[in-house]
Amino acid sequence: MTTEAHVKPTTTMSRIWLIPLIVIIVGGWMVYYQWKNQGPLITIELPSATGIEVNKTPIKVRDLDIGQVKKITLKPDLDGVLVTARIDANASHLLTTNTELWVVAPRISFSEVSGLNTLLSGSYIAMSAHDDGARKLHFVALERPPVTPAGTPGLHVTLKSDDEFAYKPGDPIIYKGFKVGEFEDAVFDIEQRVIYYDAFIEAPYHKLITENTRFWDVSGVKFVLESSGVKVETGSLETLLANGITFGIPEGVAPGEQVLENASFAIYEDVTTASNARFKLAAEYLLMIDESVRGLTVGAPVEYRGIEIGHVTAINPFPAVEGSILERDYPIPVLIKIYPGKTKQPDTQEGLRAIKQTLRNWLENDLRATLRMGNVLTGGLFVDLQHVANPDSKNTLTVVNGFDVIPTVSNEFTQITQKADAILDKINKLPLNDMVVGVQSAVEDMKLAAQSVETASSDFDALIADVDAEQLNANLNQVLLSMDNLIKNYSEGGLSQAEIKDTIDAMQDTMRNLQPLLLKLNQTPNSLIFGGGNDSDIQPKAKQREE
Image (cartoon, rainbow, N blue to C red; front, top):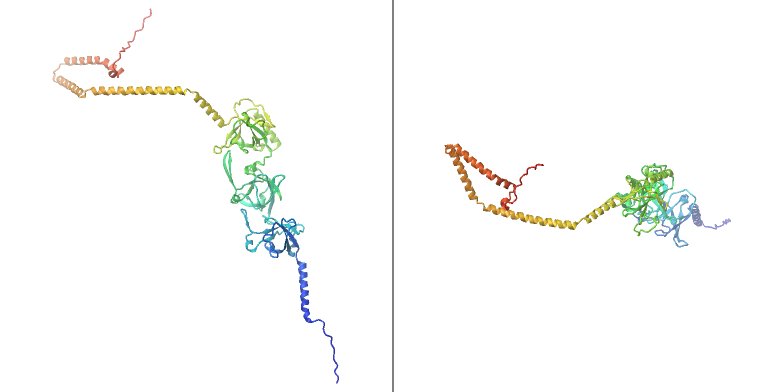
């Protein structure tokens, strides 16, 4: 029996090759899927690559990773680095002209403490979540994180200042002690020499910003020496460590309408300057001061009857008056401004003309200006406008370099000094030498009189010492005994009534004889000591008969 063989062709490829084929297909699909779904590459300009690492440093939006740094190169001009990063496709719609990027790193300052979480995790690049605007793939990173995150409700305003105080991003904006906003950015305009600030007021405080709002500085502690005394100004605890401003509406001013986004405001030195800024029109006058202006400062008030109506704008401005201060009769010019709005006149051209006409009429009569001391402690002076009774002469309005001149009178201190000088002059004219000689002569006479009194007292003591007191007592006792015997004899009938009468008559005669002596002692009691005079009694003369 014959068996036929069946010939079968052999396979050209082994099944083992199916595995790498499947791997290639899957890998290709993954590459295709990755290529199709990967996000765009962006470039970021940074000043340095500090803390940035390739394939490690993430890009985050609200702490969510949306990309990663892929490459770092130097810029062609060598003033920074270019960072290339891949952004996830699901976040590519955030790459717009309004997108901002910045490096998050530890920052510690007076106004902020941020980025401390990166001490362990490392720095990263943050991106704002903003999808409005045209598509953009090249960015310049911010030097510091933005103060206000995108989408925060509130109001952006532009502030400007040409003063010597400056603010940096992050400095606070205070309202009645509460922090309601911050400075975001600062730009210095060299041509205008003005600093412009971008600031943000948080909601709901942004409703307080109206067209009549004024901003002023409250940085640190200010000790202001004014004519009214010492004034201390301070903001909050935060502004003691860093600069800051506050805002408000001047007293007596309507709030006005709310402002729109990016409205512009000026920053003033203090609340007084901010309040006075509402007065746009002012009448300027010139004072010619013949006295010292020490204590008078720019900004000192100008008052009329105790009400402030203006302030001093310049002292000895050049060239207000011709001449030199070294000249003896050179008057020191002081420029002042008087605001119609402070005199309850409208702040318009009509109000300005009204105040000028009124002052012109007063100047031609009795209106005068004087420097008065507002505070003894500080010595600050202010300008006081007053009506002087019986002025020296009627004033003819004087104009110097286009400014009306207000005549001045001496201030109180000068008047007191002049009176003191006049009193001293009168004292100097007194014959003090003759008066001193007369006083010395009077003192010598008083000494001689005292010596005479002392001598007389000694003589009187000697006279009293010569009197024998015992003998005098014995005589008095003898007299009393005689009187007693006389009374006894009378009672016993020893003496007759006639004898007693004769005795009494004898005693009366004796008393009459003693009367001249007693009269002499009454008129000149010292005659017993100094001796009797030879002056005879003045006898009255009878009236002569007319023949």
